[in-house]
Image (tube, rainbow, N blue to C red; front, side):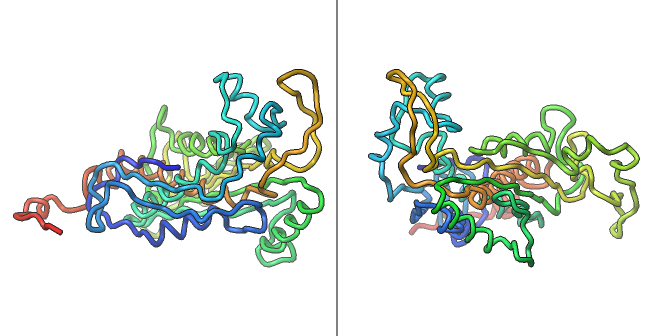
Length: 338
């Protein structure tokens, strides 16, 4: 599997170690999944002598642990909750062997791509982070009995005994964004972030700031009163708007949340149809996640970083062509030959 990242300015020094560390987060808790890949990453183009060239960067991540035969039993039986059926409706032709476009596995190359974007954001002090708020229907307590690791161990044991899967709720934050990023119509910042995140398989809701709770608030309760910040800028006393108004960033942290549904491929009997005729009861064979939420975290960070980098380039906060000052580009009088 691979991807091509176009638009990274020349002269940056990709931190390959950070990219590989991010890629390890593809499976942050192996206890929650029956499939763990080595995730060896290779850059095929776009980087020379440790610096980006300004040309497209090609990244490849090979699958090394594949068991396609397990899917034979369900080749003609669409899984409830899965895109097996809708992909057939759209294309009329289907590769049943796994790793389809509906598979979360195909998103692995997005992680190193997002890591490149994070490194661009680091140049101007912008950070993207996520945290799990709810896992398997239980609110995560960072320092309480329902801390993340405890919940993960519990869900892994529960999935082993029941064969079922669970979902979760994730919060994403982008701090350090300058005010004025985005546009009132087709480049609304929160809309572009939402478009990216809602493309991740299994995401079923997305909200910004106070989100759905805003429906129950009066304007006097929702509006963020304004004040002068210590740096002389205008700031909100609160952040119900989630760092964006009218599609444009306010300078406050951008905050959004999204729900991850349970993995549809489970070991519990479900009713479906046989496309050769009739209705059947099926149990999915294969290696699937008891809870996909921790793996979605790194994907969401990658996509948010890529969208943010695009917006910052459009607004002039990041360079389009090269991070090397123009005057220095003209001092190259010879070509270094390996």
